[in-house]
Length: 135
Picture 1 (cartoon, rainbow, N blue to C red):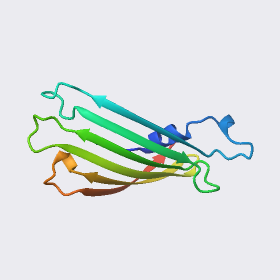
Picture 2 (picture 1 turned 45 degrees about the vertical axis):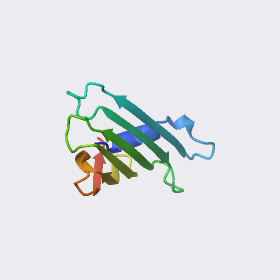
Picture 3 (picture 1 turned 90 degrees about the horizontal axis):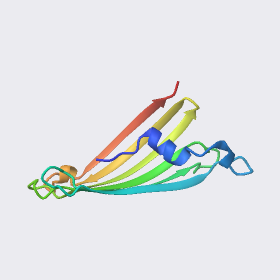
């Protein structure tokens, strides 16, 4: 359903221009965003209710001013016309590790409650990693 990718995590938190850094040169700061979406025609919208909230922090460990740690929560409520499906809830943690100006490694962990909106499906733990190369 949801998912923070490297560019979103870095842009939502790390998108501040260099002149916003502190006098000591550190660029630590936090940010958050969220949205609520409602699409009332449940006969044609499989997920008429959707909400997300994300919090991120750039420069969490000392000396790692470009790195971004983020957590997010996603909720999708399924249409009443989809039998057996109620909601899906995803909790996510990610960390964008800026190795060089052109290489970012980003592990990501998601815990999904009611995958596909079905309580009959076991909750899922999803672990991944993304490599981002900038040319």
